[in-house]
Length: 76
Image (cartoon, rainbow, N blue to C red):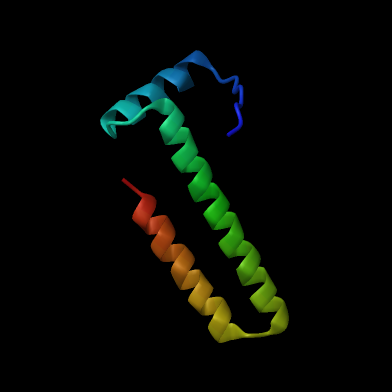
């Protein structure tokens, strides 16, 4: 496991602490979850672009549906 030092404004840190508390988790765990979401969305976009280059509309639409379901599922 790696350690990352993140420099952010104090007010943003306070808001992240509030968000983490409202989700009953730590700021560290919250940022780890947000990083996972960002990477999953990036991977799906990469898959979509590859499918679009292959000219497979059905596969591209299926990936968009998956991305939409994943993104909508993360909104709280």
